[in-house]
Length: 73
Picture 1 (cartoon, one colour):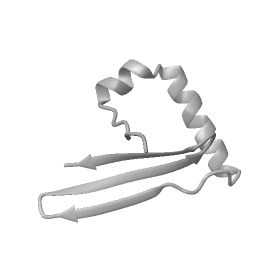
Picture 2 (cartoon, helix red, strand yellow; picture 1 turned 120 degrees about the vertical axis):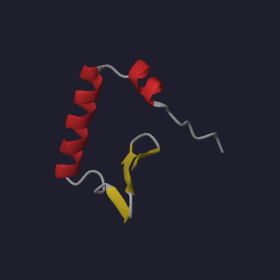
Picture 3 (cartoon, rainbow, N blue to C red; picture 1 turned 90 degrees about the vertical axis):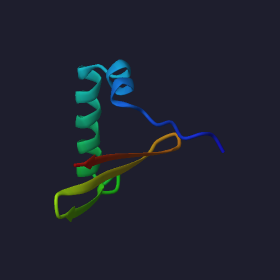
């Protein structure tokens, strides 16, 4: 099994152009609307002084791709 890459915000900025990001988001929404990908998963937990949210998505291409993003505060 290969290692799972984790990308920092700096990695994402270095690897993706704004145009590539827009193209990818448009394609993802198109695939979602056509039933080609499962709906994204969202988990949100609120606590006294903050909250934690995770958004996750799956894409079946030449192999499965899974992405997750957290919003902790």
